[in-house]
Image (cartoon, rainbow, N blue to C red; front, side, top):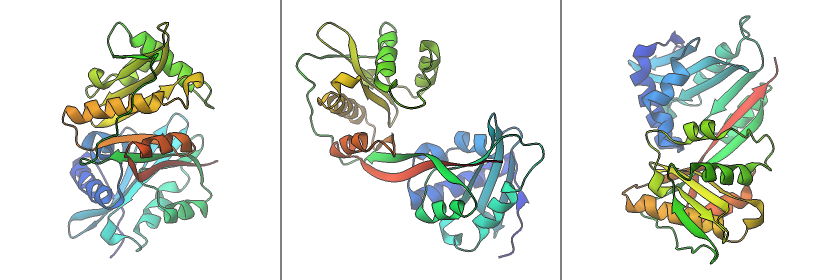
Length: 289
């Protein structure tokens, strides 16, 4: 195949979606990463340079470089039937070439990291700076029952308790390095969108009413689960997650996905114990200059 590196435009988005769906079916990962809205932001956004390779009129590889406040990010896809032919490397190296208008470091993001991908980036001077595993509860798997501790009460999300959800979120994650600590309104805006499910999003309170754990959910997705430090390893997080998964399943959601940081083996073990299995690893890499 002759490499052409054709410039892509908004009109090629359907081809990018089709390619992403083929890659997701082969590699695993979040269904949302193969949607038009997700891919438009990566391949057709302002200032983005996108290149593609076609075979028989079908897009079989593509890559994009888009500006960010920190510098620039590269991403790409290669059809499973056209790998090991150098297409991805050719696209990557063209897009990674220095551009005078860029300021700041160059990064790479991937939705399904493979060992050969990490080696490929390593020899080009990129180091992994973030990774999270995508886990899924299969449509035929039911989470085991798990009761919360006896002194805990559980309630659904409402306008009246969203500040307590936020308080539980802050107390649960404040001890993590780099915690962004968003204010209430910013966190609510990030959490509540068209797919948010208040009836599946749960808050746990202790005997005096203080928020001690929470879980938030969207359609087919367990978004966040957290416990305040002195309530960890008590079964509370497991019980809330199991209750949320049961509610998601009861409303008709088939597969349920979640992300867990690759450096958080305790949370990964908790979710595996609820029947979820890893299907992909999302990652970001960085190189100075």
